[in-house]
Amino acid sequence: MARGKILLIAQCGFCHGSNARGGQQGPDLTRSDLVQSDENGKQLSAFLKVGRPELKMPKFDLPDKDVVDLATFLHSEIASVADRGKYKILDIVVGDPKAGQAFFNGAGKCSTCHSPEGDLRGISAKFEDAVMLQQRFLMPRGGRPRRRGPRAGPGELPPFLQPTAVKATVALPAGESVTGALIRLTDFDVTIYDTATQQMRSWLRHDGTPAVTLTDPLQAHVDMLRKWTDTDIHNMTAFLATLK
Figure (spheres, rainbow, N blue to C red):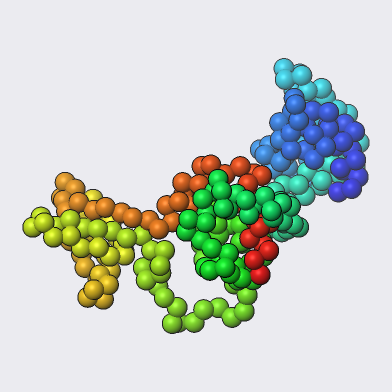
């Protein structure tokens, strides 16, 4: 692999980049059908001997052992791209906590719903790492956060009983309306959890009747997803990481 990388940089890097992921002229070799189907340099060797003159790729007359080294490196790069689970984020707390606090209280309008002394008190200690903390405020419905300590037991509240559950108001033909946590909504039916009766309630729908109005407590986070800049994300992460 090491010899193959040196060979790639010397012979192919000017077009395909030093890591084979593509350069200004050549494509990403880790996505090449020929490279992916290559067997220990056999197909690669045959291709290199003729090149592709119509695409300004010259032919290469390399010793078999060099082609094997090159193929070994390319296959290792393909494997590393495919197995992203091995990728480790070393540190994402690179922002300015004070700038993050200013954004929290100012342009981000986070303080209209949250408070460092209230619901966010000790927030950073509740998450496994800063990566999960950042994911939580960017995409709060993107999955349950992994927390330190034992997993929640069977008594944990189901999603529709969580304070952040999407609420649905069903407008019935008689003028009555019923509001509850949304369980299911399609063109043909709607199901909510009615907190007054503590039961599921369902209605069939036809041509949009009964009408359903949704209210998402996390809508502000959804709207912010289109507005975040990298700098603001970094600063906010750094600020929230200080709330231990």
